[in-house]
Length: 144
Image 1 (cartoon, rainbow, N blue to C red):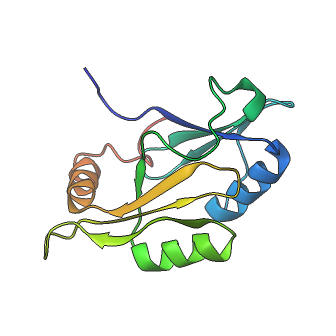
Image 2 (cartoon, rainbow, N blue to C red):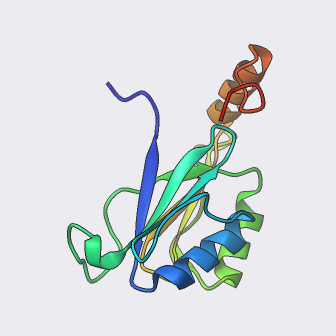
């Protein structure tokens, strides 16, 4: 059974440019590297892994973005969406409220390297984060 997202991998023809772009977006440098092939970041409340892989290792080479969209929770969808666009991403799906008054809001962009990056305001994510912090399971109390 699925227990939680472990690693999301994106592919890039220009691995160094992708590393720099994601470092700027995330505000952190990759914590793990394989020269010429892979950069990995740990991000977010649960230190999820985001891997940037040299596109020559991609299982297929589609001509356009597609496939699944992983939505990353953000506190400010509109602000994050605009920042992504300002950094050179393009609109994949505009900001959409998913059910009036529910608090679920999504949007997605295509990064400069052809990957779809989804963002979302998700009340359930915040509820689970609050519960984990109450029970002492936050990343601050977990070993790295």
